[in-house]
Amino acid sequence: MAAAVLAVTAFATACGDDDKKSDGKADKAPAGSALPATVDTTMGKVTVKDASRIVPLGGDIAQTVYALGLASNVVGVDTSGAVLPESKGKPTFGNSRGLNPEGILAQRPTVAIGSASVGPRTAIDQLKAAGVPIVLIPDSSKPEDAITRITTIATALGVPDKGKTLADRTAGEIAGAKAKGAQAATKPRVAFLYIRGQANLYQIGGKGLGPDSMITAAGGIDTGTELGVEMSAALTPEAMVSAKPDVILVFQKGLESVGGVDGVLKLPGVAQTPAGQNRKVVAMDDLELGGGGPTAGVALNKLVDLLHG
Image (cartoon, rainbow, N blue to C red):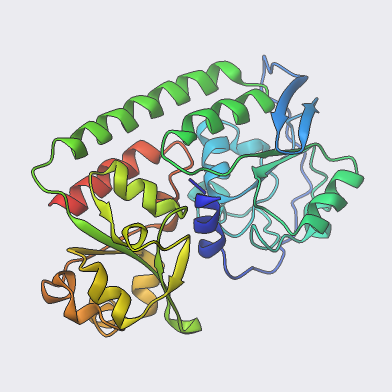
C-alpha cells in the first residue's frame, strides 16, 4: 500500500541489524523456470536471466517470494523480511531504507527485487553498477495492489504460473474481506497511531499511509485522513479530541513499546476519546497492515473482525 506501504515499511524497519555471514551455497533456479524474463519496473524495463540467488528487499516482497516456493533461492533479506520464519539463518543487510550494498553484494545475488521506496538510492546505484538486475515495483497504496505486485514478482523470477495462482487466491481473499466489511452493521471511526516509545515518536496516520486504505477497505473511517493529515503528523491532544475515534489502531511493536493498552491511553488526548474511554485499542503486525503481499486478504479480514467486533 507500501508510497503508502512503503511509509509503513519504512516505519516497520526503523532500525537495522548487523550483517550475518553467508553460508556460501548457491541454489539452482526452479525446474521449468520461465527465464529470461523482462518486466516493467520504476527504473525502466529490466531483464532477469537467473533467479538462483534472490535478494528480496522488504518484508512483503520476501513473503511473496516465499509464497511462490522460492525460499531456498533467497540468499539474504533486509530486517523487515528477517522476521519471517523462512528467513531463519539467512544473512541480513540493514533495513529497507538503509540497505548495506556491500553486504548484499557479498551474497553474489543474481537478482534483487523490492518496492520503489527502498534505498538509499546510492545503495541501489551501487548494486546496479555491479551488474545486479534490480526490479523495483511501485509501492502498495491499497490492498488490491498486492495482486499486480505478486504477478510482477512471479514473472521476474520465472514462475508466472505460480504467480497467477497466488494472485488469484489473494484477489479472492481481498474481495471476500471487503464484502464482509461493507456488510458490517457498524462503521467505526479509526485513528491509526504510529508509536515507538523507545524513540519518543508518536504520530497519527492519514492519507497515503498504508493503514489508511486498509481501514477504508475494512469498512471503517480513517479519522486522520478526515482531519486532512497527509501521511502522518505529530500526535497532539487537539488532534485526538477532534478525531473522536471509536478505535485506536496500532502496530503490535508500537503497542509493546509503550507497555500495552495502558501505555496507549497515556498518550496525548487518547483517554479523552471514545476509544480511550472504552479501551478499544487493537493491534496488528507491521507486515499485516502493510497489505502489499500475499497475506493482504487474510490481514484485511482480520482487521474487519477487529474493527467491527
